[in-house]
Image 1 (cartoon, rainbow, N blue to C red):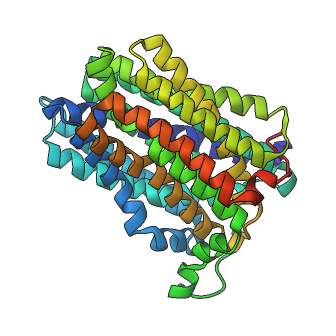
Image 2: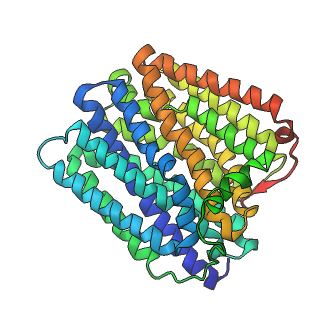
Length: 399
C-alpha cells in the first residue's frame, strides 16, 4: 500500500488492536470472577450464552445499521459504550467481586456493543484500501486481531493478579485509544439505495444461502468450532486441572492466538492453493488438537495443543474472510458481515454454552475430548455433502 492509502488503514489497525485487546482482557477477568463465585461449570455456560444472545436478537438490525449509517460513527459509539461499561466494572470491583447477576448484565451489554461494532469495522476495511491491496489489508488486519488476542488475555491475567480493578481500567484506556485512532477517519461510503425494510434486512441471509460454497464454508467453521471450542472451560481447566491461577488462564487464552499469528504471518508471504482441501485439513487438525488438550494434564502440552488448534483455525478464517469480503458488493457488505458475525458468534459463544453444559454433566476433560471428536465428525459429513468445497481449486493468499 502506498503512503496515502496506508495512513487511514494504520488508524484502522490501531483501532482493531485496541478494541480486541480490551475485550479479551475483560473476558479473562469476567470468566475468572464468574467461576470464582461458586465454581460451577454451568455458570461458564451461561457466560457463553449471554455473550451470544445480542448477535441473535439484534442480527437483522445490526446488519442494516452497518449499511445505513456511517460505519465510523457507529463503531465509535460502540467503543464509547464499551469504555463506560469497563469503568462500571472497575467501580463494582473496587472492594469485592460483583454478584453473578450483575456480571451477567455487564456481559450482555458488552456483547451488544461488540455485536454492532464488529460488522461495522469489517465493512469499513474495503473502503480504506484499493481492491488490489485488500488481500494485504486482510492479512494485516488478521495479524492485528491475533496480536491483540495474544497480548490481551496475558495482560488481563497479569493485571488481575494485581487487582481486578486494574484490568477494567486498562480496558477503558484501550477503548479510548481506539476512539482517538478512528475519529479522524473521513471516508465516503455507499449508502443502501432502498429504505430499511424487511426484505432488505434479510438480503445478507439470502446472499449466503444462494451461494452453496459460501454456505458450506461458513457452516463448516460454525459447527466445528461450536462442538470443538474449549474457551469457556479454560477457567475450569486452569483452576481445577492445571492449578495455574489467573495468570495461567491468561496464557491459555493467548495460546490459540499465538499459533494463529504464526500462520497469518506465513500466509502473508505464501499462496495457499486448493483452498477447499486446506479447509478440511485445518478442521481435522483443530479437532485432533482439541482432543489432545482435553487429555493433557501438563501446562506446556496444553499450551502447545491450543496453539496448534489456533493455527489450524486461522486457515479457515483466512479462507472465509477472503470469500466474504471479495464476493460481496459494498452496499450489502454490512448485512453479509452481520450474518458472518452471527456464524462466528454462534460457533464461539454458543459453543461456550454447549461446552459448559457438557462439562457440568460429564466433567471438563470428557467434554473437551467429545468436542474434538465432534469436530472430526462434522468435517467428515461436510466432505461428503459439500463436494464442491473440497473440489474448490481457487487460491487464498494474503500477500
